[in-house]
Amino acid sequence: MPQTSIAQRKYSEIRKRAFENFINIRLFHFFIESPAIPEPNIDELIKLSVRKELYDLYARCHQMVSSLPVPDYPHIKIGELDKLYKNWYDKNTQHTSALENVFQEQHFFSKEEFIKFYGADEIDRSCTYCKVLESEIKKLAEHGWIKTKRHLTRGRTMELDRKDPFLPYTKDNVALCCYWCNNAKTDEFSIAEFERIGTAIHVIWTERLKKINKLKK
Ligand SMILES: [Zn+2]
Image (cartoon, rainbow, N blue to C red; front, top):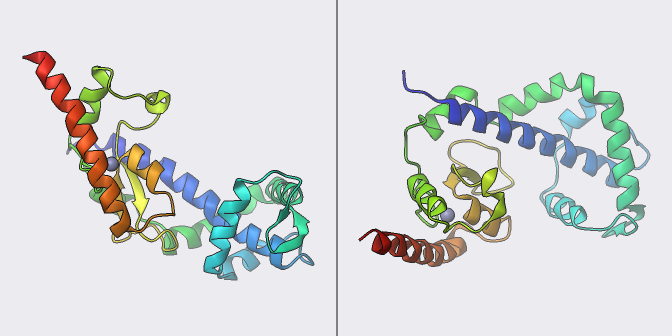
């Protein structure tokens, strides 16, 4: 059996983040639209279907200072939202398993599915957009051609980009993508638009790799 420890670690990391988002966007929906229910229970959160535009608003609120009101929802300030989240988590952290089941069944890969998709440890994965290989990233890093300080924790292996960020994590909706493309693409660019940016990044990686190869000769 080939080793799959990288895929397993990746699965836990992404799943944890995705589940937090799954809860937070639902809480956000409740807090801004149903101020009369400051403490939604788990069943209410499960039943909720979040409107698409709220994802956008939720992301925008993350960039805002706490004294500002939520855009289009003047009755509530960012800082008050933060308190509501904290209060909800303090009371409900132990009771999220029903929510987690729905998340796992309807919104996220099973572990087996993910491991099959991501592949064994020895696979040299490549970025869907800029085509860089994990082995090339390693080579670039060894020769001082990776600039980001965050490379210690991120960038060595491919990340996941959700093609449609509003659809669940399933193998049809995710693309393997490098840390740099993932950071640049965000929720802003469509796949078609980002292909052009990916092509430009590919040219830069190729130039850097050529410099390394020249040195070796
Ligand atoms: Zn890339």
